[in-house]
Image (cartoon, rainbow, N blue to C red; front, side, top):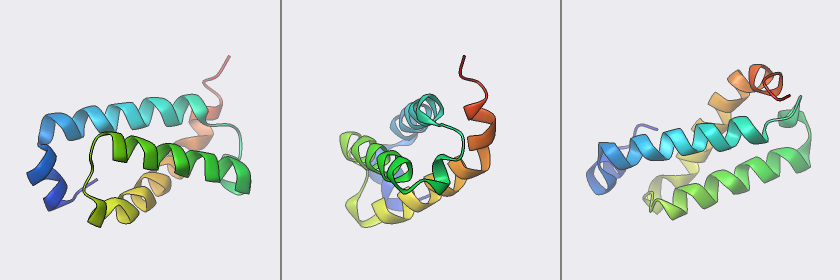
Length: 85
């Protein structure tokens, strides 16, 4: 998530904590092919939005941040799904 207003408003430590929390929650929630199932994808997007809001991510950049997080999660999702016991 590269956004000047986010860095300015939140600072690097908060953004780092947000990134770790997002990664952890997405990894735990990922299922095989979640990105192709509309309901699973909608749940992931809702979770991302809640985390961004909780960390007070700048509203003007939230859509771009959600899109970027989903794109990155899609790249890693297949590996995450196989990490579950």
